[in-house]
Image (tube, rainbow, N blue to C red; front, side):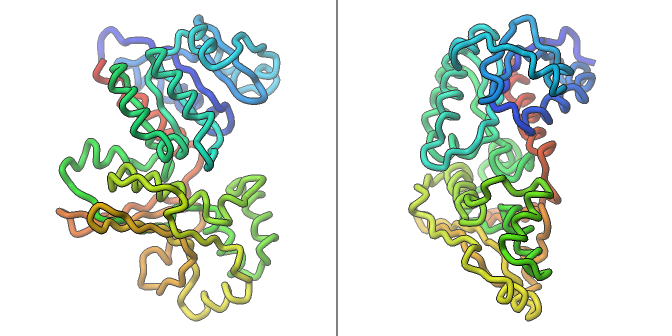
Length: 341
């Protein structure tokens, strides 16, 4: 048991399914956090488009935050991100707002404000990694805080921390994988005979596809993930227009079924490979032989194969990722951020 645990004021911006799952995870792991890591916590701020900016330095009741009726009775107490962080006396910001694939805002602004206020900045958003990785990392170092983003790709799978903490001095020359669950589910439904529109509706009913799935279907979500991985794992930032991209909207049910029946099913394959100081990257639907491990990634699962200079190769598979696994990535980043304080 760790003596004298320290209590941290936590703020969550973007209080949707991931934010709520994070609160539940914090509750479930409270004893372990206290006894094994010396961490106690209270939520002093939540914010979303529907809620506004709600803050209380004394702490908000987690059960009330998870109850729709009780949450609807909360009133905004701040005018914007900086005012909110000040009132909440934030020490850790969890940023779980929606992706803006054009410029990463307003998530970047939220993270900057947190770091300037003296709080650790933890994000589940790919946008800030793609558009402001260097800036946010440098700001965090200057402030003596951490900018962490494990949940940005493959939910809570430790892709980014793997090389930062577990495999030091290993160099990655490239990667290849299945990184978008929506297209995976849609293609499987098309293999079963559904037309694209019906397959999308099924994925939405399963809670996998967004109400507007265009970023998934057109390959944008996967391309942003490729750009994030390239920046962090390969050390080579990419602009989205530099990534060759094609989604699955050009595929019809007959061709998808024929591909499966021939033993060469379609998958939306993401890849990037280093060539000197440059990186070539793409997101494209490809027919894969059944001998290819990527061809067997199904449903909401994802997979990445990493090409390394020491190990002959490393493949990581996440089976049926969900909001809890995304929340876990943020939870783990919280422990990493405060453990050396």
